[in-house]
Image (cartoon, rainbow, N blue to C red; front, side, top):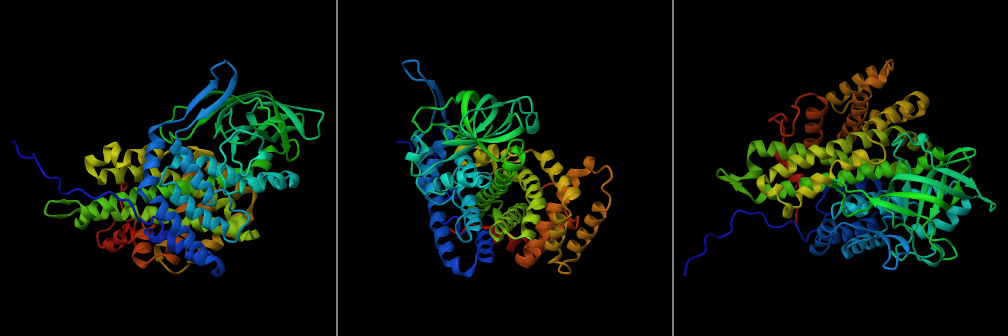
Length: 544
């Protein structure tokens, strides 16, 4: 009998059955920093429980199954009746149910709710990012609904519910509800003021009939949607329920599902309105102003989602290199690989620290914090989401050929990584939004400068970067052509100031050297070799 050809050695064990929260030192410290003492113990216990759920073999398997079995559109039933339904794999429903039960749609009404939800959302993205869309849209719909107190009173308890009910039936008969959103149209894209969907007033006060086509509609199996349409008084926000109060289906014609690069477990649809019943949200003509609160909240979720993907990519890379041996030693101990891993870890920690700081500003709710968010959210959305793709690719390379194989999970992260830079306004949209805030809202820049000023004198490279930034801000002539450069610097300086204040010295020193001091190359793994990179990598290692 022939012997075995080989015994498997020198392979890292699966990164599974661990507390995703407890293993993320930067995330734990951010929560401890921003949660009030009276809710801290409760929050840490809650997040650790969710972290064990995310790191469990079962939830990781659900994520893989949901990704491998994309949703399918059924426009008609077997008898020819139009039904416009989307079928999801059971694992999708299990994940979404877990996300709802974990409070990922209910941040607005509990102490420290935004920080707790932000940490949870960052973790939940690591299980499978596709189900994050309905969770995000449901959470983010609240500010828009609050422009109409009666609507908020009716819908907000359903949105904050921890019960997931997938059935299509009247919202008043359900213990919980999910929201989607439809703003963009094929002729306008990000220029939502070019929308042509028409809204005709009906006899019932606040009721309208919509006619038009939405090029992207998120989460089409949700219970209701916030959409923009053109009423007699101008572009207006509307609530479109999937099922009407009498139990009949609203006219919500799903034309097709998008075949996307990543985020494949989530359904993104083109939908047509043809005599569709809708309820006005806010005044006619104030559609953009009404829905902007939802957009800002979903933009922060884009930052959180990218931070979560970064963290998972870095955790996998460091975990692999901790066990893998090559050229006479562990990969993690090789100076060049250590440089790469440390550089990736810096990017991940900076993203997490910034994202949780912005969530804390939502919890604070003060005037100055709201002003800070006006600049910091689009700047963070621009920069963090753009750094996600190169980080994911580099992290996959740390696994060598193993990282190019689907079973590793790294290709799924790579495919997912560009998405958040596109959703809720691509890079140029974010940069232009920052410029608008700089020109029209001086209190926003003041709040930003006060925030970064809290780290003044702690690091000479940060101080120099702030000085250079002020020089750029002093001359806004022809600024649109250099808006990306300016927004990048705004984000990096803010990240640097937060790390200098809160992160261990080895982390802030490396970040300031590589990101603000110009002492690094254009790719990951080019940090100065004199830094304490081993400590940076060890901090990022997921302890199982």
